[in-house]
Image (cartoon, rainbow, N blue to C red; front, top):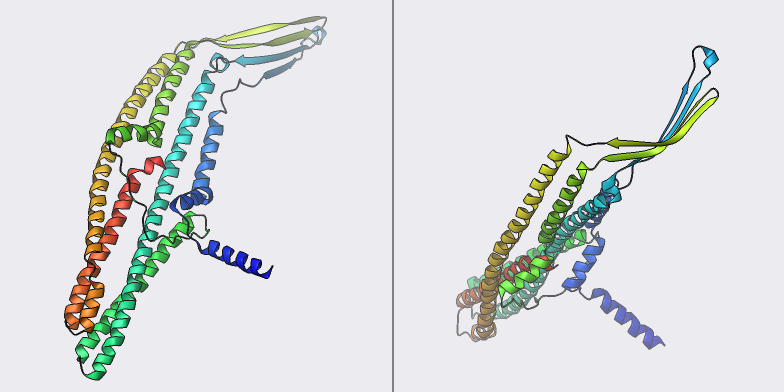
Length: 391
């Protein structure tokens, strides 16, 4: 039983320190982000307001008490109940307009969600970069420390001079400083991710990116993206709204009706019956139809422009991502084939090269590693921008 408890505790401990994948991070931030929750409530409030005018007007109740003069004719009492009837409301036209406005509110929320998730994705990619950089710098510190210990013995034996020894000390100091700075920058990125996650800690332990798989046919891929991009969906919903608002404006020519009941009571007499009122729109309807036509035409033009702008933007991102991916892959392949750190260390220990030659060769390799890590991050970020509409 004791062994089982120990195994369970070990399992829970390993789970607590295990990192989260990118999908895990994005799902968590979507769930806990305070700004996104505020955007959702604002969208719900907008949708509620959209439906506040799709109902019939309230009943109108009137009462009149009139005193007769002379008093012998008695008093008069009038009671009336009237219900205004708006035909576009009865036909459901206003309801359809409200639903189109709801779709626009949802689309705006999705655009805001997309922006926040892209920010989170960029933060995750930065965290992976700094994990890789910290690992690399720790390796450098370890190598520099081992070389410094070896050169201390060589200095004591008189095989090297104090200048060579101090150069190695400086190398270790620089590596330690770079490691401290990289850890601080990583902490800043993790703090940003925590803030996006509503103050809840996020664990990112990955130090290697997932491979990038670019679509082979850009045009075919763009059609898929275009169907789900929030900005395009909003523009498409704008066309629907424009058409429904035009239909509503045209129904503005319809008369506005009011039906009800009225009672008039005087001394010894009473009248009661049905009332009917008609409001004929002669002046305002034409201008509203003209305005609605212009807005519908503008919505169609906006939809076309949105698609064209999106395609141009993604074509540029596609070309950039393709070039950056190739550069990153070539850089990693070249480094894997030309890693001479172990050989340089052996040569320096054997006295086959001076400390200065060793440090110059090592610095060139280290610079190449940092450029490779940076190029991989830039390729991943370009791919993130390219695929942001699929989040």
